[in-house]
Length: 498
Ligand code: ZN
Image (cartoon, rainbow, N blue to C red; front, side):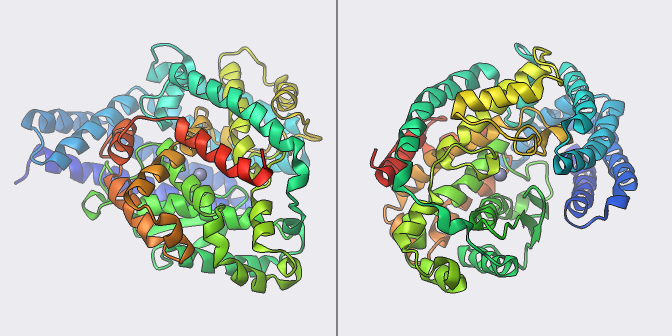
């Protein structure tokens, strides 16, 4: 009928497609591109990002949006899409095109510098880039606007509506509960022997095993694939092309197995989108915290549960007979749930993981607000590690240089990991209320029951609702720390006899 709403959607589909094309270039850069391609690739990504941003923030988009709002959406979906576009448009029009373009170019180069600095354990090589990125993030936050803290503007990009004022008490509670709980577990370290996991695990065999495991859980390789990356991630170019990456360590089996399951959880979210929302502004996850709740749920609540391995463990044993032949199911289950003070966030156990996040959250705010200098940051990092976990990194590779995030210009992102952990328990609890025999089904090889429940209650909505609305609809209440703390204390309390 040639309405403003239809014209708006046609225009926004171009914006969406430019974004997806950029995602392909980014996937290629992280998985396959030779180092020589970096400068040209930075330019190519900057061009796509500029075109997409200009098209989106143009007066014509604003005019069509205002007209479509005045007409009123015909269906509930139309109205939801208009709300999503309004939020995105207001956010994007506050960012100058030159700033967006500069950030894309700087971070593309900074990411390569970070990778080289990390490899060489040379913080000094990355420091000037971090300085530039912090400056860009401050300008970004100022342009976006905020009511209370500079950091709130960045948080809102990943977790709409979330502020430091909301996170501080949540992290405060987790900090005060998890430090003594983890110390109690550390004191009983003898209860769990994780050494079987550091034996020899041939990388090609790990690769084949993770592919089989993903298929077993319901990840559809006709709509996805798995590749290798330094920092595992999930990306999508449509709901029918959702790719994951993993990492392999010949002497640490969990690196690949749980990175694969984690990224699979992200992939499920994208693949589960309702068909009619595909390619619209309501596609994608409602927030990073919700996205992370899905990856954590599959990685930890399913992947590290005893029921998941009860009937699958013999298959793993026969895949790696020399390394696991003498390890019982119980021994393996305890090993994959070993709690210890760790240096590397992505290899941290479920109990101490949030302590890693609290460290980054506090440091990001201090760096952004200028209370901590880039030069002093490594020392501050090491001091906090000592305070939270009682360990000091022996080098920067296992300290401040370990994460890709700052190099790609995303501050305000880390807290979403722990919000995701908290939510994963709340959402799993809700699924369990409706499917009381869920653990038995997972044990019997049926992951589809859980996946279907998640699709129905979380995935299919995409960004149609705000994060708080999705949580309320799926679980019947707002974000709560209680299910998460209960889950951790019951599972790890049993393993360690605490
Ligand atoms: Zn994740």
